[in-house]
Length: 193
Image (cartoon, rainbow, N blue to C red):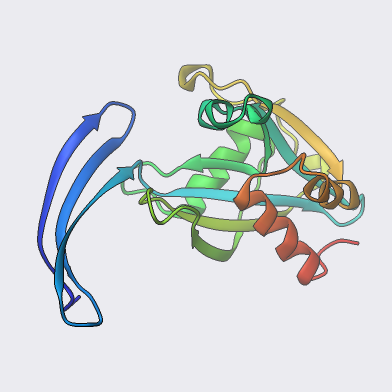
């Protein structure tokens, strides 16, 4: 970018992910240059998926504790979301989400269709989300899911009528951006009724 120069990055923390302070010069419309400082949280990219069943008119969602949401509002700690996960280094998005579906919700899918790519908080987090959809049937259920103990996951698997999932957005039971985007994608594209 021609309006950007003198970028300096300082690692502030490197625990679960990396928190950087980035100092840079930015040129504004009036031609002036200003020194800016921002923090950027880098936890890699992620994937998520809306699993839907056309015959039953249902979707698979998860419910789990999210500490950052709890810190913001104690009532928001238990989050209802689509199945999601962080991509391993050098892993493609589809491979990741197929693995996450089996680990988190216990279904074995062979493929997923990518429908969107989005930054959910580009002012603070580097993560790009790859959003997928895939049809599921009861025959694809191979285990109870629930996440991996080694990753300290305790995930409740929810099979919800699609109309109820949409209502859960309206009554703010679902307040997770990626989940809202995928449910609205399903509405717009008439995947379910």
